[in-house]
Image 1 (tube, rainbow, N blue to C red):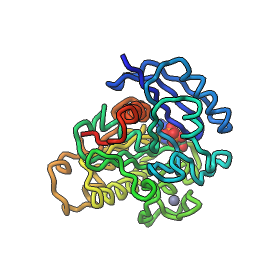
Image 2: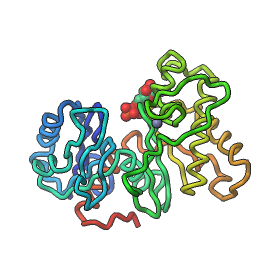
Image 3: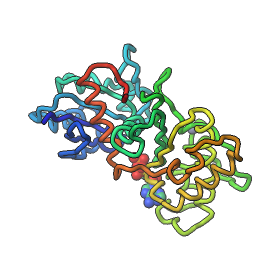
Image 4: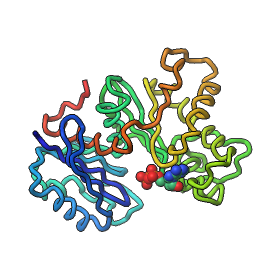
Length: 297
Ligand code: ADP
Ligand code: ZN
């Protein structure tokens, strides 16, 4: 059976895997992210001799994922200075001579859910990760959305809760989603690790208030058939009913669709046991093997 290579490139670790066409992961390993050169050499060591037919890369960003762009495949102005302007795709291609396809980590997770998970068969879906940062992967008409760069929808601006005096964690925006509701924002606002705040109702009420605002904005702009929420913070399962309820309240009956009447199946947790990113990278590899038609259907 044909083997596909998958790489989920993160700021702290690189997950490398071998997968089959149906998304089965045969083997997986994690390599710490150090200097670009050392890291890429170790990735190449992992894939050497595996006979993969193609490699899919889902990477941290910002990254140039526009085919035909002179800087296609480069990491852009990341705060990880050693990686700034690093030509990740070329470095991988020099070492691993197979067709490759690259996209953002969140588009990768979105694609994993769209191909193998709870969004299978849907034409439009969004995947929001709420962890160290907030990122949003967007599939529209079965294609991953890039636009002029790629969506940076973790930085949409939200209305501050009148009682929230926290100044926000994002150095660029005082009231963006990431700055208000990613893990480090909660840690700073409440003075404790988010994992330890489980029993503080006000923490999750506020978190849900912001995530619901974001959901409403995405519903009104992108009209997704489903909203999938992943990332470390979303391990707090009590958030889901709160987010669904607040989303309904904020929409205030304005949009009435079958999907929105079934909130339990509309705003949902990631369904692939935290393998959505690496499975999406397998699908990117399948696209790389087959040329450039990136439609799911
Ligand atoms: P990353 O975003 O770096 O890929 P994660 O998605 O695991 O990694 O996110 C890490 C962040 O999520 C940390 O800020 C951490 O505080 C928070 N986090 C992790 N697990 C939980 C949990 N069970 N409850 C609340 N917050 C969590
Ligand atoms: Zn921001």
